Amino acid sequence: MVTSLSPDDFDMDELMQLKSRTITDNQKKKFEGYMAEILSAYGMDLNTPSTSDTPRRFLDALFESTNGYDGDPKLIKAFPTECRGEPDCLLNQVIEGPIHFHALCEHHVFPFYGEAYIGYIAKERILGISKLTRMVRLYTRRFAVQERIGVQIADTLETMLDPSGVAVLLRAKHMCVEMRGVREISPATRTTVFRGVYATDPNLRSEFLSVCALTKSS
Image 1 (cartoon, rainbow, N blue to C red):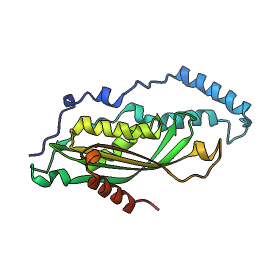
Image 2 (cartoon, rainbow, N blue to C red):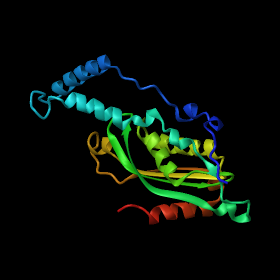
Image 3 (cartoon, rainbow, N blue to C red):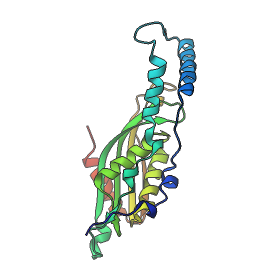
Image 4 (spheres, rainbow, N blue to C red):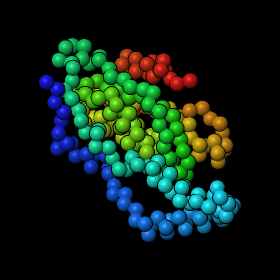
């Protein structure tokens, strides 16, 4: 019989670094005033039908885009593995991707967007496939840097599942490079994290990366 693990098995608040995000009506009004002042000073005419409500809409969109800080309780469930200790268990990869994401760079609060690929070698526990997408969204819907997102995903998988290995590949384009500074229409930035058997077995790494290349979105 398949049984899910209880929330008590993980300190999820610590694992996901949850924060309270209660914004009062008074704060909202104050923040809208700040944004109106900034946008107006930067050249936006706020006295038009299409822009008069822009400060509020911007703040609402920013709050929604960073809802990863609110956590995701559905991530807690894990299940017993289907592998029963056979010799090939260390070769049985679970790979999910491409998982599309958007995030906000914490350096300039400009978007970066792309695809995530996650692989792991299960020991005693596995996650439902949809939970890997939820995990990516948990960390990409925060103010972030690409390198940290990969580490956070790997850390979470190791804490929840204690797998034999974890692999994470992120491929993203950064608007802070394309819209400011050098204004370079650059190729995607790729970052990887390899843990456990992925770090020691080049064949597993090669297979994981090959699958990622085959499933790359056009």
